[in-house]
Length: 257
Length: 262
Image (tube, rainbow over all chains, first blue to last red; front, side):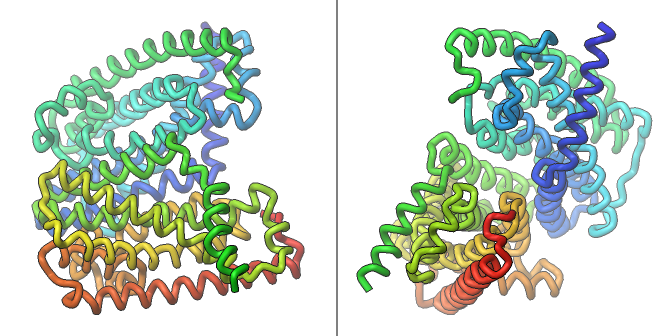
C-alpha cells in the first residue's frame, strides 16, 4: 500500500515536471482557454449583464482544466510509445494503472495554471470581480474537480490505447465537454436529451461545485458527485486497462507497429 | 514553363499527400469534421446565453474561421514537414523554381480548407435550422475561396517560421486563437476596442466572414465586392510576405548551415 502511494506521488511529480517543460502541454494549455475566455467575455459584456461575466469567468477557468487534460491524457499511451517506454512500463511489476493514473492526474493538475491565468485575465483585463462566498468549500471544490477530471482523463487514456492518433480523439472531446458540462452555457439551455449525458460527466458537477462555492450555495453534494464519478471512472479504467493489455499481449500489438 | 507547371500542380499535390498526415481519416474526421461543428454549436449556445447575435451570425463566422485550421496547419506541414521527413535538403538542392515549389503546395490546402468551411456551414446549418438560400451558395463558395486563399498566405508565413522553429503546432494554435478573437467570427468588430479593430481589418478572414454573412442575408456579389477585394489584397500581401520569408530562411540556412538545426 505504502509502496503504491509512493509510486503514485513520485510518478505524478515526474509527469508534472515533464508537462510544465513542454510548450505544447504547458504553455499552450494555458494560452488556449484564454483565447476562448476572451471571446466569451466580449460576448457576455455585449449582453450587458455583469452577473453573466462572473458566470463566464468561472466557466472559462474550468475549461482550462479540461483543455489541459483532454489531449495530453488522451494521447498518453501514444506518447509512451514514441518514447519507447510503453513496453517497459507494461512489463514493470507495478500495475499499469498505477503508472497511468498519476499521468492523468498530472495533466489535470496543469489545469490549475490555466484556471489561475484565466481568472487573472478576467480580473485585470475585463475587470471581473469574483466574490468568494465559501472560500473553504472552494478550496475543496477545486481539487475535487481536478481529481475527477483527471480520472476521466485516465479512462480516456486507456480507452484510446489502440489508436495511433489518440491525440485527435482527445482533441475532439474538447468542445463537446465545454458545451455539455455547462461551463459557459446553463444546462437548461441545452436539449433535454443532453442532460443525462451531462450528469454522467464529472466536469458538470465540478463546475457546479465551483460556482456554488463562489456565488453562495450548497456545493457539498456536487463535490460528493465529483468523488463518486471520479472513483467510478477509475474503477472502469482499471478493468479496461486489464482487458486492453490482455488483448495487446495476445495479439502482440502493444507497440502498434 | 511545363516543368514549372508540373512542379506547381503535380509536385504540390504529391507533397501535400505525402506530408499531411491529417489526411488519415482517424485525424481528418475528428479534427476537421466533428470539431468545427462543435465549435459552432458552442458559440451558438454561448450567443443564446449572452443574448447578443443570431444563430446564423455564429454559424457563418465560425465555419469560415475554422478554415484557418487546414490553412495554417496543413500549409506549415506541407513545407516544414520536409524537415522532419529529412527531405528538406534534397528539395532545396534541386534547381526547381521556388515559386511553383512552395506555392504549388498551397493549392490543395485551399481546397481542403474550402471543403471544411463549406461542410461545417452546411451541416451546422441543417442541425440548427438555418436557411441559407440555394441561390446564395455559389457566391458563398467564392467568398470562402477568397477567404481561404487569404488565410493560406498567413499559413505560408507560418511555414517560413517553421523552417527555423520547432514548435509549429504551438505557433499555429496560438494564431488560430488570435484569429478567433480578431476576425469577428463571434463578435461585431465594432464591439472591440479601437486598437483591436485596427488589427482585425489587417488579418485574413475578417472581410471574408463579413462578406459571407451579407451574402447569406441576400446581398449580391456586387454588394460585397469591396470586402472581397480587401480580403484578396490581404491574401496577396501575406502570400508575398510568406514567400519572401521562405526565400530568406533558405538563404539563411545555407549561410549558417542551419537547415536541420531546429
